[in-house]
Length: 72
Image 1: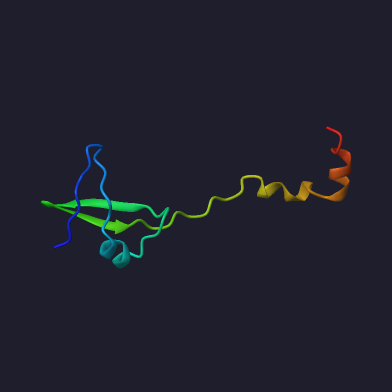
Image 2: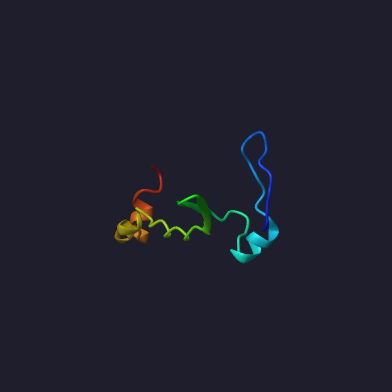
C-alpha cells in the first residue's frame, strides 16, 4: 500500500508511483470520486481548447480595414 501524510493545511504530495501510473505532470488536473468507503483518483480529461470568440470576424481583417482603423 502506498501512503502519504496530510499537512495542517489539508495538503498532501501524490507519491511518485501514483504520479507515474497516472502519467501526471505539473499542471495536470486530478479528478476524485467517492465510491462507497473509498476515494478514486484519476487524471482529469484535458479541457477542450477555448474557441476564439473573435474568429468569426476574420472577414473584417483585410488590408483596407487595417488602413481604415489604423489611427483609432
